[in-house]
Length: 490
Image (cartoon, rainbow, N blue to C red):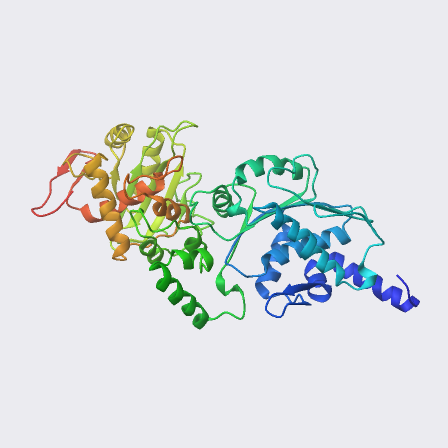
């Protein structure tokens, strides 16, 4: 640093500003390569990039799902660059789906950003400078590594670019995650790969969004780039439809919502993603329930019960042990089809029955459709002995819904019709992803994935159509079984 005392003082003030704010450093001093002009231009941050940078700086574990060409790889590398310069001695690991792409991040992008800095921001010299390692004189270093390596380092920051396209992300995470568990950070960044609807990256993103793990999930849609408007989007849409006769490619490259990005390809899915999307209105559960609400951990309430409204419950029971599927409840408004509450967890049959009775009573003594297979018999028995809810009959004219081949077909035919005809409104992100995964051939989720929420929602949709044709109800004086009116279906 050479110059007058006033210059030295100014440089010191600027360094402190850069250290305090990565956004200030990138927007003021960093240049990136602009492909259309084939030149290095100032990195002028968009609002979405500033917001994302703040989230990155505030959280240790970040998963970013994005549309294409939003400058996010430059942004994440710029953040890593600021950490290396102003928070030495940082060790930063760079991964991509191919080794040459990881090298490009190091040799082309990071070195290019460094070369275009003012001299007074540069380090004195390099200790190592090759295709896979760049070691600065302040002690910070970058390493571009294949996806099979990285487990021998203790990292300040690990970046996985195009994480959803990495062939074996699960193996990479197992090797690299322990390197940052001592207080380091990790960023997974990717556009979606619709060929892998249940990929490790998507599972991490979904769990983070549902607050099921320590990850902070961020989504950036196609319109996060300020020079894109509705006219631009319609051009992309028309092009994709002309080439593929499907919107899958548009939702993969330029999704408007994370639901579009995460939805599987339309081929071989029982409920078309377009039908789900038109009925999906994402809403977070209400944070503070009144004291008279059922005190059930994990209960998601999207709308309180209203006087005079009629509600229905769908129940999918499971065994309730740590290795079994989840048990699930879905509560819908009978007339509007709006999802008003949901519950999912490792509940034993009797516990699920008690929860269903408690939730159903709160929702104006809702009627309930229970899947009768296996553990459903125990749920129905508990409700018969202890509950006060109306218990609907199924297609075989017995209490509960028998999910044999005929029952499964009827159940998901009804659910598909409800979404196709926009007769329901879905709020739960977890339920949306399960419904989107149901395969047309088996009417189940792909192997290893869950469908408990999807089943309970489909049962609630069926209950909306049955009520009040078939039900059983027990009051203090006995059991009343009501048959079907002529022409009704159960």
